[in-house]
Length: 509
Image (cartoon, rainbow, N blue to C red; front, side, top):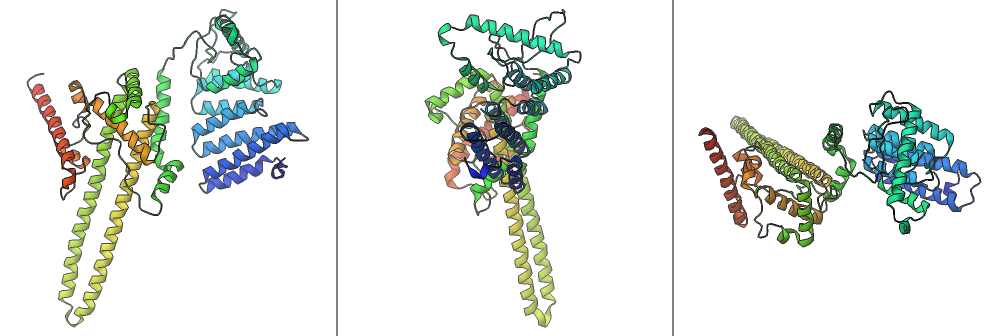
């Protein structure tokens, strides 16, 4: 047994992890929790511990505190995984307060149906006759009470009683077990213990079947059930959309505060200034020799991407259009800021030179000393201009990174191949840029989509288009001429389309 853990005091670990969180070392805090949990569970299973019940409670406290720690660090997905691992823990997985805290966590995140799944697994079990994971009667009473309160308040069933909830859950559980026995082949039944271990790999499940009428001819409550094998239809309600919208808005608005976002790019920068990362979308779509994208992505990735696009209808392409337009608008904003700063500095420089020349003209015998002072003042001004411009460039780089991070989050949420979440790895970014190039080509491929896809409807002006394609005030180098020629043709085609649309509108349709 590890002597450093003989006291099994979770408060020691919690305080040390909180201290690391205060300094921004989230990974260090996670390591503390994980190593302590590993050692304590190992001691409880294989060591000679005098009071295993006390150690079980300490481990449960550590699991819950670990999840709370991740919540404070805004790592909600990892926190959910921590709760999930806690419910599977061989030592503390049957402790009721773990399940209760897990359900409350999901409820606070507006994931009511997932919270229902947690209550069901704790109280009656899923696809098993062995009952729920929590067997302690006092813990079960508390879970039933909390389950009822949630159904009354969050599921809009204020008249539901505790007995009605229990009857509904038990009846549905019995019906589903009967269905499983009828449909399951006898040679793949397996052991009940193995089935119990496997059932927890599916959390959270978002199916919510409606129950039949109760014994008193009163409608029974809706209870989320993952043991339904007769229906695979998932109905998306307005509440679901609103919850997802709010969660997504929260993620997008808090990107700059995300420790992972900041640390990832700071590691990439090292000691140098921040640089603008690879952009996922170019101004103009690529010219593909193969419409399937195999020449750009390879056979396997192209096939997966086409299958995903066919399965989603227009949803993915619509999101891709929006992200492309957002890239153009962001480029316009940053170019305007830099141009305004340059103009302001040029004006101030001109005024300063005029003032210094005027001062020198009346210096007389002190001309040499005045000249020295003027040169020093001019050098300080130029240094200040360099710093201001670098600050603007740094901010532009971080805004580009924030845009890239948001694009990666959205495209990963759509389940696109190549997008597993935000990353700064150059190789992964290159792959993602090729995927987005194919999407770009796809949503520009149909002439019927030109009006919806146009720069005009995105609010992007001709000047914005020039900025977006990277055209500087001093002109383009010869190395970029083929690309610029392609973009110019694309711009001309866009504007021709705008002209044709305006003409049709003026002619009455």
